[in-house]
Image (cartoon, rainbow, N blue to C red; front, side, top):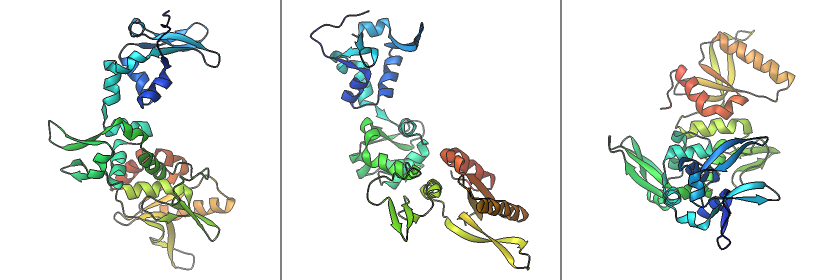
Length: 311
């Protein structure tokens, strides 16, 4: 076990990451790839971080904390090490950034475009002046010439981007915590409305993610739209209608949201609704509220099965 020289400042990985303005996950991964750390099984302790001989050579030491127990610390000299410098100055592509936020790279680029930071060009993306100001760097594929944009690492902590992604996902809406920009929600006639990325207002918090997704992918929709069911009539011979939570006129598809919190009355309505639409030729998708958390996987596949491609 190494003993730290008295005169040097030492940092834990989290303190080092903060000083470098990068994420702890990124720093840890870089140290693992450089062979400085291992995640080993310790007798009676479970898995713990241990120093390798390379890590020891680079100055890593074990220290003890009354609160956290033993941890690995690093000398100030690693701040200028080639491994760390390369990490700090590396440019991130959309896939790497999207992974941090738990969305797809395609959706991230759509959000960048919605912010006006990039625009479509030659089957790829071009950085706007505003995007360059935010750390965007224009590049193109050597093989195809298709343009794309990579980003300085600081984009991960960009407040505007984080807020826009939070609005897109509806983060905090179900808990009543709305991003505080003064524009995210509005109350009128004792009803709470939530502002979409499009600027429109919606009264069902559970529908916000779906509305934002359709808007971002350029799919025209009508909300709470009555639709006539061909070939289905009421008991008195009138044409039967249903109300689609989202109606996609380009493909004639209805999206219905099946609520988790449901009253006996609403349950009966849902059973009747499904019975009616199954009797008609109406293309439809029923989204459970649990499906909304995996919307980027569920919805494109479901729409494609009905003939509507998002790509």
